[in-house]
Image (cartoon, rainbow, N blue to C red; front, side, top):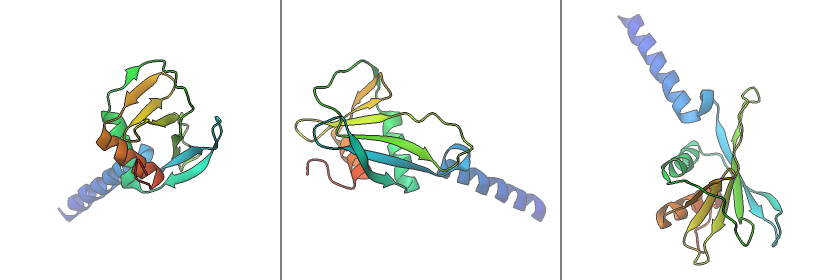
Length: 139
């Protein structure tokens, strides 16, 4: 009976680790780049390493209503980000996320890849911006 309890506990612990860490139990980060000047040039701005924040970003993007669209913006995105996996043995295709701040500075518009577009709610915009930049939206 003790042996069975230990086996069940071990399975639960491994399962929890995989859920928290992500694909294959590997830790994920988000690398955030910020636009430099007014051109389409970027430099690394921030790295989100907190597992809970990475999962929160995943949740926001998972729950948003994506539209298949080819959107032309008059300016390059202010920010862009990609997930970074800490295991060189995992072959994952990183998808670029581009982020524009609305003129009122209260909402974000996001392109996922090349043809998925979403306008986030004010609440999701504020939270996503805070996680990605460490700053408040509109400051």
